[in-house]
Image (tube, rainbow, N blue to C red; front, top):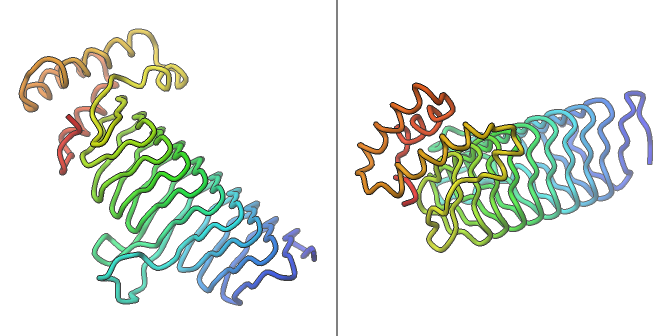
Amino acid sequence: MRRAREERVIHPTACIDARAQLGANVSVGPFCVIGANVDIGAGTVLGSHVVIEGPTRIGRDNRFFPFCSIGADPQDKKYQGETTRLEIGDGNTFRESMTVHRGTAGGGGVTRIGNDNWLMAYVHIAHDCRVGDHTVIANAAALAGHVSVDDYAILGGYSLVHQFCRVGAHAFTSMGSVINRDVPPFFTVAGHFAEPKGINSEGLKRRGFSADQLLAVKRAYKTLYLSGLPLAEARNQIAQAAAIDAELQLLVDFIDRSERGLVR
């Protein structure tokens, strides 16, 4: 190993393109490959056999475990080699053999991952996905193209998310869920195809939701899924409740922006 003046530690078997940029205290393990137009922020650690292709920008203090493939060409037959990119924030963990692809021109040209996410082994994040902050995506879960996963969502192992679907903030998908519609914030889904199973009460408690807030979320769940009301009427009732319980506005906004329809 050799130590540069900026405290970078680069294993001699690593292959790093001259056009790549590495911040201070970056560690690159054996047999890594870092391509052109890759910018890696300070304090980031690459285990062995990590491949990062560009254009890719990676923030500070990320950790990549062995055999990750980051920033490869999108798996989209419409992709013709146009310049697209991947953007990754700070403090994320990428476990063994997971894959993240760059965007496509038809999807805005960028795949984005936020901060402090925990992405477990064999996870796949396809082109043009948006992953927020503080999410957990468990082993072998897969996001198809153009999927959005909002802050604090948790995807159980082997969850599969269809193209263009959205998983709302604080939502939870049980192991093996197959998701072909949008998953609203706060709620739990399970099954093939996924169906609503209640609220993510444990997750919300861990994030400091009060007893009153949990009760408001439970009432909103009953309004949406158990009242028998048409979606538009249920949405309006939840919007009225949001005037008192402000956290419910997140659910109202999610319903208003849903394009694939809600898991129901």
